[in-house]
Image (cartoon, rainbow, N blue to C red):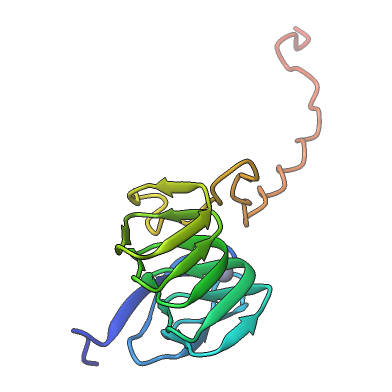
Length: 172
Ligand SMILES: [Zn+2]
């Protein structure tokens, strides 16, 4: 089995599990929560109204592209050359091009804003990823922070052992 360069690490955007996939995979199922994950780069060339746009890869909104969503999540980066109206969670650099229009909160490790870009509103949180939260994606910015759900419920405690009578006072 050849290894070098054929695997990449991804993080499930449903449950946060991190695992390795083939570098050529376009969609995978999370081994922990079994939900489908999009792992390829997404290029938006036209207007899109969606609830959520999520990928373990990159999202590029081209000049004629427009994304209106409640959540955009891109683990490897986001480029906006068109219009974006959404909350954004990004695990890579965010680039807002000179024709880019942005409206919405953002959490990302870095943001680059070209002269000419327009940001109507948004709470920006620039947070480098740490080890336990490697892609920086565990929480949305702003007042709607929710603690990450614990996917593993604690195991049931073992049943109580039967009460044995004490033996210290055995009869002489
Ligand atoms: Zn998962």
